[in-house]
Image: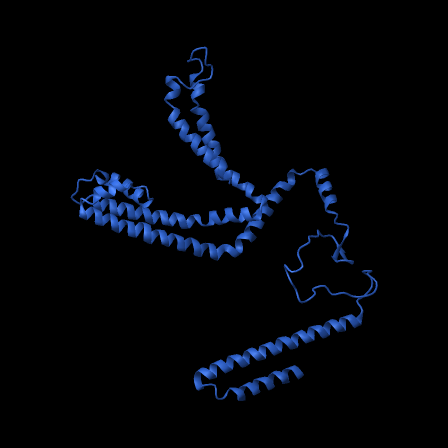
Length: 321
């Protein structure tokens, strides 16, 4: 971002130095005070337009920082920036193939003006790869079989092979980074917020904190009052269905000085003990299935019941212990 900002500043300074209107001040008639139509101004119109074009591209690239207002837009812009390396590799490979075929067809004997020399051949092959080569030019290539065969091979290599390879690379790279894109987008959004915080006044920050109402206690459910210090959002009941309540409730006083009741601690230990028993049973069943599959592959599964009983008894013994 800093480099793009510096590049934009350099482009604006170049535009200021090449401004045709400034060069035409005092050199035009009285009817047009601000005009670029003078010999000095028209001489710098083309380099001025190049600098203006680069400045507009850099300006809109800087506008992509506004994508932080939406996590999905930020993730999309982040994915595009991460996948540019794959597109750059494809461009390098395509350029190599274009130069190779341009040099090759320049050695052939033909009278096609589109492939007269390496520079024209490069332009023609690039247009062919981008689908901009007119059909009339293909008809002219048919008069030279060797040149036509080279064109067919180029289309197969550049368009079919390299094009599909680019699609596969983009798909695999996006799939590998998809799980982290939203997280990185939130980190980037948090970084923007942290950099913006010093410019927020104390009065505005106090009004913002007051609008959050963090001192009010939140409801876990209807009539179930919970803790304070949070922001509550509602969602459909079936969106994130859970079979286990993550909130442990204890009766009695809510004073921080009061200790936890011992009976509730024991009930919690009993719940944890039951969970450990369930996990042990699941491990025992997995071992039984694994040994059954191994022995079935080696001896047809004839000795499975014996081992199954042994594993089951060992699981029961560990549970009783």
